[in-house]
Amino acid sequence: YSGVCLNLVAELSDQKADGFGQDYDGSIRVQQMLGPCEDPGAVAVTSLADLQHRRWVLERIDGLELTAYAAQLGYELTTAPELIPELDFAEQGFLSGNTGCNRIKGQATVADNQLRLGPLASTRMACAGFAGELEQRLQMIFANSLTITRQAGYLFLQSGEHTLDYNLQDRVQ
Image 1: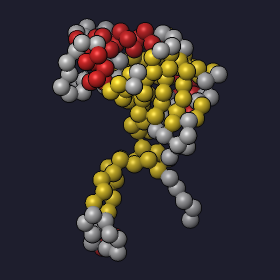
Image 2 (image 1 turned 60 degrees about the horizontal axis):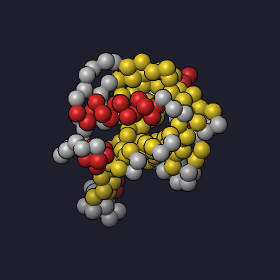
Image 3 (image 1 turned 90 degrees about the horizontal axis):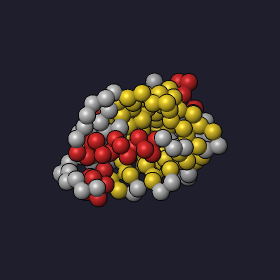
């Protein structure tokens, strides 16, 4: 046997289990397996293979969670936005996802630790309020070359003064 490190979404319990786990002081109920652990240190992304088959969900913009970012822009959100922006990287540089308003798809390339997205096709729903504002800002950021870094289940995309923090949600097959 050899040790394996996995990222899991799990529920811990201090109740003793019956049967197989009866000799342990508690249990772990795995709800979702995200994939192998990544090096906790910052890792340069040198190819699309480093991103491939992963779904990344936007958690922060410029260090602010989405509800706080909305407040900074003058929008009052009592809960997270209805549609959280995400990026899914697939084979041969294919990218899909959403901007919090519209679905996007197109090509992604990585060279010299820089991510380029596009050209991107998008659905054309009109979104009012924060969803529309968020989409405009993300499109503006995505139009630039993005410095890309991974660390402990996060993907950081930086363009000028803006940083997008994406959290690894799952591996897509």
